[in-house]
Amino acid sequence: MDLENQQRVKDLTEKYGAENVVVILGAAEAEAAGLAAETVTAGDPTFAGPLAGVELGLRVYHAVEPEFKGEVDESVYEDQIGMMEMVLDVDEIIEEMKNIREEFCKFNN
Image (tube, rainbow, N blue to C red; front, side, top):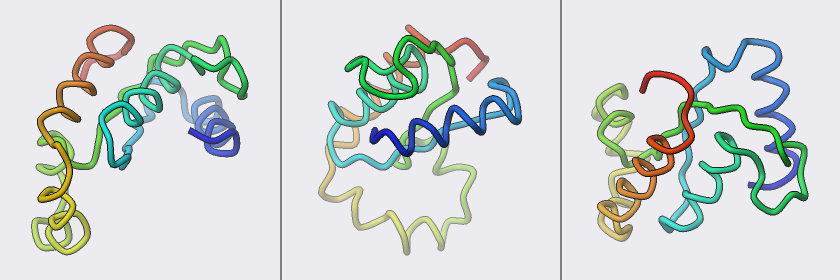
């Protein structure tokens, strides 16, 4: 997650409260999604950005996860994300995100 997006997440969390923020990711690989998820839950693992050492514990999901998919209009989802499901390793992404939430999320999922 780039430094600008880290700052946006930090600012929104300060403004609305961590319990009211949910982060939706769209990284193409499980490892990249996991790093971004770790950043918004446990803090920037590279210790380079605004979230270095900041444990927000936010709820975080990937756009291909059932929890997100179930909340979005089906036709919009298919139009915007459906094709990506065919080329991504969805199961690996879901597993990575689940592990991050279980380890670092401070709020009910």
